[in-house]
Image 1 (cartoon, rainbow over the protein chains, first blue to last red):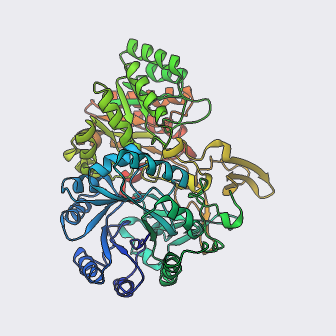
Image 2: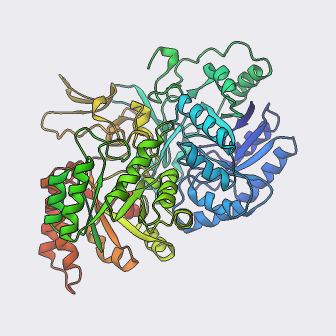
Length: 295
Length: 332
């Protein structure tokens, strides 16, 4: 199984991003996703900056994929999306059907991102026929369903590679409204880029103090991060091609080391991390954790 | 402007028809549509009756098969598509590529509309569904500003339908997994957001608690209207300790005042949300919108009637308040 770094989901500064990718070039990774998937107002890096970073990383032998916006509403956003889909240097990850439409026209392979609604073999086969070469299943898809879909597409002879999100806060929803701005009494149009104050997202707890959600601009994520380390043997047995680690403000290198050590020498599975969830994979609420015996 | 009204059962359907709906949308009593609530929706004989009633009244019948077919259970969705064709409904509303593909290939004569659950918010996404499956219309997710709707309408390869009134989803429809984060069930996979069997009301010293699968979504003081615990409408605690409706307050969408702009933009239909609502609610909401649509041809607006409509709709609204939602950029 390959080890991939997902796109940075948060609003980090230009300096932080450049430093992050400079370090990432040395990490034990097979692939790196680069691109803004959440908010088009985040302009610390322009497309040309991302292409420069991509070329640097690609020169180290890693595969680079350009990620795209999950919720595309404005004409300007469509314009940027189309430019990304038209470039031919790097594969593109589609997170909105607009990208699928644009990419299908190019005849080049692309990544079917987890923000696209693919829950069954027939839908997957349609997108594979359009050029989908790698599929990242929806966050909420249980292992059992994934397994079923994979065997069905294999039987049809149309199987893409499958990449599973195994570490990080899982994106759950997208909105027109910016919830980080709202928390600071602002609107999206005068947000002041307050989301940059939350490099790992802004936590929301229930009224009795339980961690529940994480706010990241127009995106809401799970409160507890996901860790599918306890399921590595199963992932491998299923024929999963790649594991996606979602970048955090600190500790990403250590996490990658943990997974890459296991991949080099698969022994027993990593011990579950307390406070992390794996509920979706096990077929229940996303917030549940096998580590705490929850169902 | 076509007035498209919800019906969760035959009494509601009759109420919509009697009060001036141009079209009514229904679903089957199973997980193939996104209002899969206990006791709601139509079985096959009821669907046949719905067809008779609407045909006699000259009202169009739309059927929603708008959830995503789950692995290993394809036959349920294929059967629903067949039922729609068998009963000669005017439109099949679908979201899943597999369902659209199946319907367009096996029942090419059955007109297709892209459900709001298809989450298409731009002309390229619409083009995808139009070119491959021949959709004639799309229901727009409630995430676009008025300007964005106007621009999209100008470029859209298909007719557009927008929500006019009802409970407001604040996340782009079709791609919201907040409910499954807490309960393991969500609209895409199970046809329901925050299913009732996970809801628990607890009377405590501190107030009435509304819990969803054990998680405290909100707590209401005496005299405070208690809302159904959907994750997006809860009150949450920030790091500062402040507790508020961090995502959204209970509020209903009401776009009545934008009818002139939406009409001018070329939007062809307005949809009222609420298949889970009572026949009385549907009767009242339909009547207000019928009057408003009929009056929209009049050159001068009657402020008094306008106010009366607003009051009627507010009375039907969540939290007794209404909003333009994302259509108004200040909401975003």
